[in-house]
Length: 357
Ligand SMILES: C[S@@+](CC[C@H](N)C(=O)[O-])C[C@H]1O[C@@H](n2cnc3c(N)ncnc32)[C@H](O)[C@@H]1O
Ligand code: SF4
Ligand code: SF4
Image 1 (cartoon, helix red, strand yellow):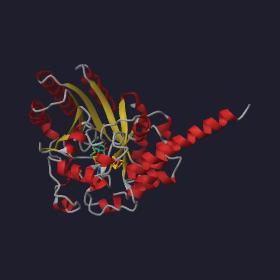
Image 2 (tube, helix red, strand yellow):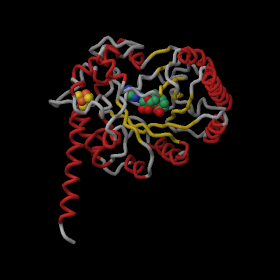
Image 3 (cartoon, protein in one colour):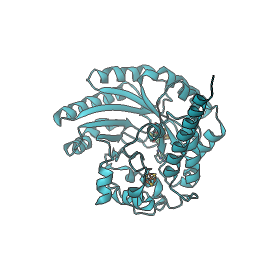
């Protein structure tokens, strides 16, 4: 009960819905749990309005951002005018439901940007913005396990082409990605960071390939330190540095899957090979058990950084084989690292002022 009250005060009042229209994809990222050959849902995009309305009827928040994605919604093999018209009709249906239930809606089209259908995407953005709502692109970037050489070139070109339409870039904290960034200071991440893209570091959710993908707490600490030092504008690190109070990272996203299943993220690992990766019997639509376990394991309610902390991914921390080498919570160590850096900075400026010119 105390845990619930403490978390309630740290939840964003803006709700997030993730709509997986289908799983079909032109890439096959090594960390992704989806079946990329599965075509279920491609021909039935508008049917998603039924579960969307079921969620909206019960929605308590006044703003909902819809992350609409596949698989890959702009994959060359499937994205044509017919599918684009379905996306526009879906957007219109969502906007109408927003009006019906008095909820402000926003649209994010989540894409890997490996596509040649640029004018169709532009048409989608123009037509959906005419509905009077925000409509942006969101993309992902991973140096390991995502692109081959040719499609990385396509990605880079499209990223700059759509720079003004992008709401942000998600980067995933898998172990291979972390190793790459630690060892390649002048990588593409540096370029997009310097070019002012908004970047959000997301937590990896273990599935049956977790042995190769899941970072240890030490890996996480190392990458957080690098981000504090060299990439302080990457969120959520930026929020830890600049704000005393933050919402938790977990958005308790409401999900609709390709077959219209309504759930939370726990449903993504309901296969027997995935489920056995977890200590808890992960539920498809209720995170409360793993949330409480997290708060208790790290004793968050007595932590000096509780207000500032965004906590981690509750699923990742329930992973049975998670390597925990550090004596303390990795987020606590990072908050302390930020404090220490601040003290150093202050000392520097005091010393500089004391030295006569
Ligand atoms: C499933 S993809 C679909 C949209 C699009 N194809 C893309 O990659 O952006 C949506 C997001 O899930 C992320 N993702 C994939 N596998 C994940 C995992 N195991 N844990 C956490 N996020 C994951 C991707 O990096 C991407 O940002
Ligand atoms: S591009 Fe997106 S959907 Fe496709 S495999 Fe990668 S993460 Fe999964
Ligand atoms: S720093 Fe660690 S212990 Fe403190 S609130 Fe965050 S997750 Fe909990």
